[in-house]
Image (cartoon, rainbow, N blue to C red; front, side):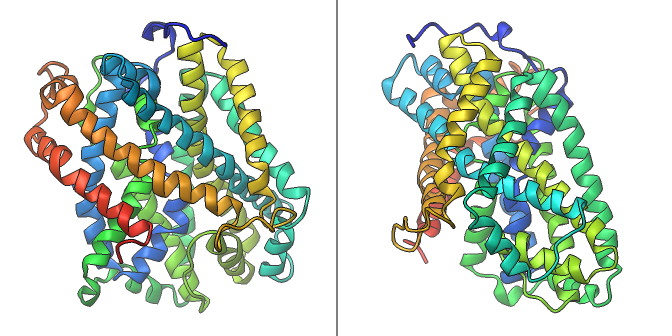
Length: 453
């Protein structure tokens, strides 16, 4: 497949509205981590204290990086490889940085689709009557089955491929405009139900009342790490989405709304999870055990639990899908831009390849359970490589690129549409991108890899 000149931006598609971009970009950010990690971190690191620190850091880290990523994406008007190549004047190093973003999304989607398949299975399970018997045995039996996880992995990937193949405005934008409002609506319904449970107020107090005795450096590190991974910093999803933006869009405003929507989803997840587990005397957990063991246990004890279990996993399906389509789009845009290939065929072929790469992750609790690196199974190894090595590298280099290659002045011109749009915090943004955010990224990397404790 010989490399050809990238397509002109006009032929690539464009968002039909600002709202479409905001919904899609927020959807890319709102994912499984908002539900299975944020409530756990908040409960462990001081409740309201963690929330306060998180809100401060979302302004310093989240908004600063989103402005940067959207600016680079719109200026380049191509996929991450094409954008870095174009704006750097053809530098091989910066093309490599772009390829890292492609690799991150390829790797993450290969196992994210596996978990998305689990969620789809549970949603259908609740739609058809719920889960009977022991939750641990049900989950363990399902993920260790040699065939069932593969089937649901394929179904979830099929949904992702279908949406991306339909294009930017006709697929991703339409789907995001439907799924994101429904996601927040379901959150509201679940919150109302959970807060009416006996004993839920104890959990609410635990979640919201600050415990300043737990305010420490680790609180800031955990908050920064959660923001870093929740907003997909360094993955190139927002950069790719921004490449389809029109020239008159208000980047500073968008960079404010998107992290607010992401934070709202995380906060609302806490309002669902923490009071519900307190109401039934359970412990908040993190990761898959929260989704597939703890919450089903809650629903088994709750009146109309099958209905609310279905709504919960429908919500989780929306969160997973809005993230997965952004990851596949990064890869599809690379093939469409650089090799002038058809979008539908590119989405199908790439989706199929990613599905195949995800098979060992899908079977990592079954016939591939023999594969271990240290204590990590195949899925966990892929997660560590993408999330804890490649993403921090990509995020750090993106800040360097904005400050040293594109240049602060050019970035501000792009963010303000050559001075037509106000950007009152431009000096603070420039300082954060040049000095503060790179240090934060290094700290997050050292903390997440266990080097800094």
